[in-house]
Length: 395
Image (tube, rainbow, N blue to C red; front, side, top):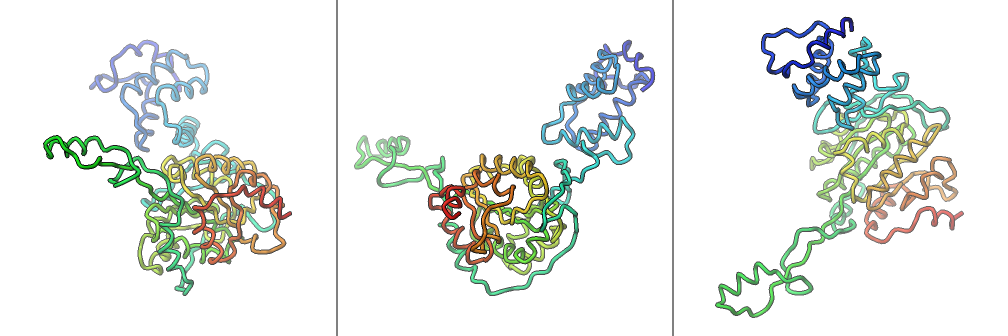
């Protein structure tokens, strides 16, 4: 960072792309190198932005590294969803960290894995929490094998598409009654019939099933139920065209593509290979926030029927979980939590985490068996009653 004052005599030069063989001042090399680093990691950086970056640094002095940081943010303009990655590269490049980390480097990171590719994305800082008796934040990676089981999911698969909540599409279809006038077709018919039309031609908006999103907890405390949940997820993807499935524990993994394989054994074997955190720790809040931080994933929840299969045993402070559930509820058409703990008649939502999210949930139901889950999912089209009101009556 020496000789930064040399830039004061050179910032009026043309853009870098026009300099050809003209050499830059020695002090400009670190800033040009940082721009090249960002390009190498697929950031969209135009030559004019690099020139503006160096000009901004010159105008600011700079008096501190904070000036360089502010100049980089203002001119290189990283997108909001890649801001954390930008910060990591800035710290690694200018502070000389061998392994740049996202802000809060003492914490572990939630990794996001999309089944359409193998690249893992750093999406959000995850805080290690204390407390919780049945869940752990410790990451434990393992694989799992699934065997075929006669569980009667065939009927569920066939009925799912027609049982999901529906919405009115903006696309229209022809109808004989209870529609609006199809002016274009009517005029065409009038012309072809020499000015006469026997009956008005009508159209109406189509009704289509809503998206269906399953979020499956694969942490150690859910070990006894994970296999059944994955079989249910495979039947859902096979039965509904717009179903999406994610697993979460210490990481977030999209497994929809694997479950689109028709043969269940092959599909679950592929899903098992994709998920790295079987039977590990629990970071429910941070992983759901990671899901919401990826725009393409968050879009899956918009207007969808969302079902979370988890015991919701969040460790320590539940602030992240409460924030994630509220944001997810704001996007979803209906948000339900199915917990195996509700299979016990003595169950009450007594933990701090459950009490915090209960007012936001549309449903808190029994998730202890495939039968209870399929019955509930096939009833999603019926009006929901507030989960909080239901459990107050039970209590």
